[in-house]
Length: 111
Image (cartoon, rainbow, N blue to C red; front, side, top):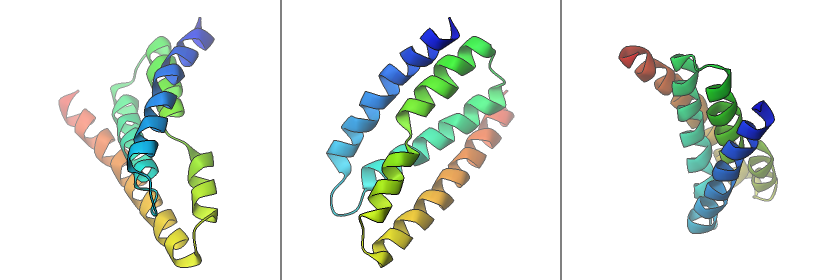
């Protein structure tokens, strides 16, 4: 059952990631930056809510795992000139970790 929930979540998250990337990525991968930031924020919220096993499989591992992408981020960073790659890597790291912390904090206030 857990594997099915992960697959279901990823089946929604991955196409959504692809669509946002196609819409926003250009010379700078703004779509992937947005996706990784939003996904990290949502992950922080979900972690703070202490979901049960089924909810975590569907939303945390499935949706957030399918929605965000380290491999796409890594490829896009390597394909850029050094300055742009550095800016992209730093922006992704700072925004993603920050969004996760904000999501955790906001969910902690509500829950």
